[in-house]
Structures are given as structure tokens and as C-alpha cells.
Length: 277
Ligand code: SF4
Image 1 (cartoon, protein in one colour):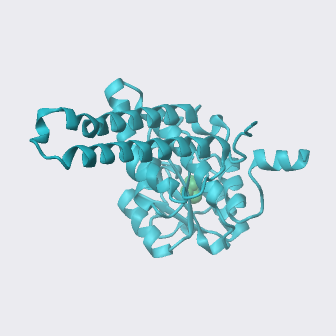
Image 2 (cartoon, rainbow, N blue to C red):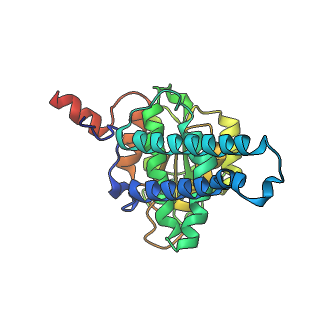
Image 3 (cartoon, rainbow, N blue to C red):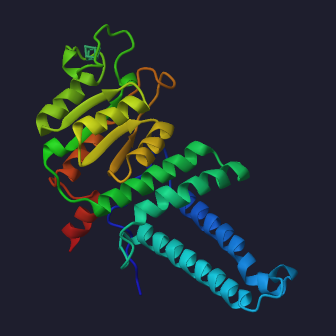
């Protein structure tokens, strides 16, 4: 049977070249390691550790076999969903399993085999965004929060935006003015955060139903994990002056994200397919 590619697939260029295959490879490797650990229960009945207990071998083998079967099914269903965008029955909590179970394991594994952490994070952000897009329902503008890091503001600007971005004079020396225009055009919520704790407080205060967050790989990854179960669509910033200084938010990708969550557009791949149909 021919399986189509996920209609929610996003271009790798938006993710610094990040590809799903890194995420999938690490997830399969983590799953294999967990299964290897569960093999302990399968060999236990033949070891001296059973201590003559007659009920232990069948129980141990059932636990080991069941654990391996569940993990293998979970992992293969996740890979299937990531590639095709099709959610198999019983896989509603797919993001939960990835964020809570697999990703921490994958980060450890990547560190052990020497894979660049940012590469893994970019791949994770891309997969997360595609899952968020696949599960999204159109929301009202007031339920969308556009969250930006303070380093998007020009480092020489004397305006203090911490208590409200409207202090910006929209002078054009940085993107804050254009971002405020975007906010005004779509009527969404907007905030600039100076760190993870402030970002968390903003989310609690504004109570959005979905977040479009701009940040670096590290902050986006932790933001996605901390905000779960809220859907966070992560947009990587550009850092021509180095980390945390005069960073750039990719406006076209942001606007496209806003339109998708407001139900004003379809993902490019899906729209293309719809047009061809
Ligand atoms: S656009 Fe706003 S934040 Fe940026 S430099 Fe001008 S006044 Fe400051």
C-alpha cells in the first residue's frame, strides 16, 4: 500500500536544517535500549535469581513480553504518525509519550554517542510542531499568545518593554515594531519574556490555548516541555550577532503559524495536495 507523506510536514530550512530522521533514529534506539532492559524479565526464569518460586517464571515472562510488545507498538505507531500524519486508534496522547518518556531518554543517548544537542533539539522542535499542527483546532485570536525573547529588541534601545511592549516607538531599528503590527493585524496576545520563569508566569496570566514561541533551540525545547499539555509551536530565531543579542524572528514563518492556528490557512503541503486533487 502506498503511504503518503504527512501533510503537516514542515520545511527543514525553517529548523536550521533539522530533520525528523535524527529524532526517529534516536527514538528507535531508545526504544531498543528499553526493550533490552525488559529482556531481563525474559531471562530471569532461567537464572538462579528465581529462588525456586514456581509462580515467578510465568509472571516474569508475561511482564517482559508485554512490556516489549507495548513499547514496540508505541514506538512504531509514533514513527508511523510522524511520517504520515495519520493518528492510529489509541494514540491521542502521542505528544505526551514523546515529551515525557522518549525525549529525555533521547537526549541522554545523543550525549552518550556524541550527537550535537542542538541538532537533536531542532529535530524535536520540528516533530513537535508537526504533531501540534496535526492536532490543532482553529482558535479565537485572543487564545493565541505570541511569545518572544527580550533579545529581539535592539540592544541599544532605551525603551523598557518588560511591562508592556506598547512602550515601543516602532522606530524600525528592530523587529519589535513589525511584531506589534502583526499582533494588531490578527488581534492576538503578545508578550516579551526575559527568561523561562517570566515566560511561565506570562502563560499563566494570559491563559492562551496555544502559543507561538520564538527562541533558540535550548529555550524552545524547555518551553515546549514546561508548557505541556498546552500546544507550543516553536519558531527558531536567527542570531547574526551571537546568542541573546539583537536576534531576528522569522516574520513569514510566524505569520504563517498565526494564520494556521486561527484557521485562516492550511499547511502548505496539505493545501498543495488539496489543489491538485
Ligand atoms: S522598534 Fe521599538 S524596541 Fe526596537 S529599537 Fe525601536 S523603539 Fe526600541
